Image (cartoon, rainbow, N blue to C red):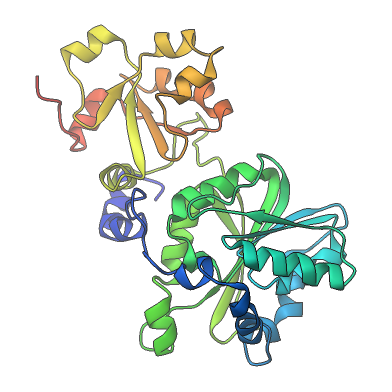
Length: 342
């Protein structure tokens, strides 16, 4: 991943890892939750809050791994019936219980109130966003939920934006292992831990801890935010990763050279947004956002990498996942990018 040539071997994997974010990676997986009625609540409670469910049995070990502190704001993404919301709440300042179903959220609020917990706030999310304010949470807790993310890049980027700079993501997931996992895990969970980790890293995170010593069929990982840049400020994404992300719709590519350079030659995959024009719009961010997507990786290139860095300095404060390329136009051509037909 750290250099272009070594990472070319990862291209087939990345094509599976970063599936097109314009469409769900697992359509319908959330139907039973998003359509759940009040009559379904007891069934969910009996299913999720019972002895024999691995994360229920290991709930105290999981809470210990979260390293909770009294001043923390924690988002429990995929709160479900509120099992972990209620366990987290006594240890922190506030818990945001995030879920896609209002009936579940109403149940979480009611059960928390019954337990005397006054610091639980329900948040209704969507299939591609946690719907949390920017820079608002210290820890995001995702338990047995990531495999339900239909738009993993978009959802994790919404979490990235919500997480404070020193914040942490705690992921608990089923460990899908060919030839070992149960038929249910193999059929229900779409990918293994390596794939899920690769997706989360690509969304801007860095793994800092793995714990699987107290599980039989699951694992816990902790992640922190990562700038994913070299010492000079260019993206560490390899050429293979850039190509895969462009191909599957997770990313777009902007050429920040000037019009005359673009007219002389340009890349088939790129759109023009001149650095001079970008700079002139720096005080009008809405005009920039009208042209540059906030829910995709935004690669920028120029002739030799310098202007890409200056473009990134304008785009990054707008919450855009901008990744300046060190490779210039000619180098990208030599790496297999195509010229735009004249």
